[in-house]
Image 1 (tube, each protein chain N blue to C red):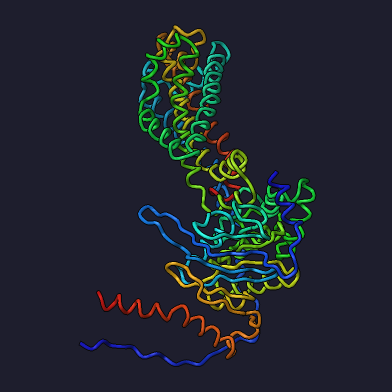
Image 2: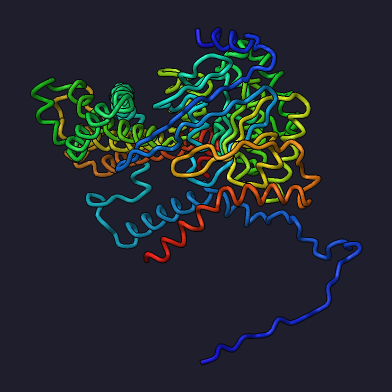
Length: 280
Length: 293
């Protein structure tokens, strides 16, 4: 039942020029033991096919919560989210999430089994042999050929994230959701992974919604950036960043956009900090 | 007072054009035989065992301890041989193990059911934690007198007492394991469309396996001790008697070496289950998955 619904969703054609994901007036709240936190307040944005759409903001701007909302793990208290015109109600394999944490891989399954697990349970393959074939092709895509029978604990952090990305891409979801996938990696590996992600995107032009708190990463990875302000998360700006890549890091244009976003995000913060300091 | 601030020392830069072959040969030297033997768990454990046996034998011989108080190791082994092939030690052991397996299987099923109820919601979790905190501290053997009234003399009473010592550690550890499954893993499971029973079977149980196995080991240890103790109390009344009864009966006949042989069997079975059966399960699962070294 769920599998056929997912298959129908994959086949449903979307009209030319229509957004794949629409987020309209979404307010998300969650409870801690003592507080009801409003993570985002009436956020609007639209993601179009092949977008590398980045949600950028400092901690507390609700970007990760927003991603969880799109994934279906949280229900908005206000507004709605539509994927290909259908309201998002629950988690599903048409929106695959890649997390920051390394323990998103199932430790009791090998690299290949982690991917076939997703393919079989997510309803993309009913036969193990088909799943194996798809898994192997994605393992080679993320340059992990030869590691398919390795268990996750034997892999480095970067390799684990590659497996998670391969698993997400192998599902061929309508939209790939990435929650700071490179934040736990060292700087050199992070840069390499960003380049590889862009390479993979060039190949298949999948749609990705990418969360980061790094302005530089947003410019490098994103084609369009949604800048969110914190407490609660509200849309501050939506910018184009497709012209930037690793090739022009440090150029005047790159630095100018970096500074512009930085000022956007931190102009209010400095004042806030100062009032706190003066008060104490 | 002025702080002394050391100046930065300026020195020339350098970059090597080519790195020669490293002079050391010890990039990866194989360990010596002694080093490798010392690294093997069974070798170290056997050494301890041998030492204990040697001390036992030497002490009982040199101090001339009366055989009625503490027989020598050699006498104990002889009694073990006689018990296995002339008396009914083997069948008594089998009687005990049968009851243990029955109790263990039923206990695991009840423990698993309780932990599934506990994981279903806050109320379910309250049921388990309240029951367990009341009943877990109660020694299983203390229930035996009541069990004898309820179920009569025989295997049923023993199984009932065993259940008490298995259910709580299994249920509590399984529940703890379920609760400590990381958030990303849970979300991954739900992301790929797993719900309810399939979600528990394919994500929660394997992810919580270290805890579940710890519960099973604890349940086994409790159950084995409880069973032997219960059989000692049971005495002549039970049809089979079991290993505990064999120990009790040997002592009554002043066959102290026989009682020691019975104890040795209790120890051996406990040792094998702990160090062979559970160890193998760990090697095939937790060690391979990197959840335990």
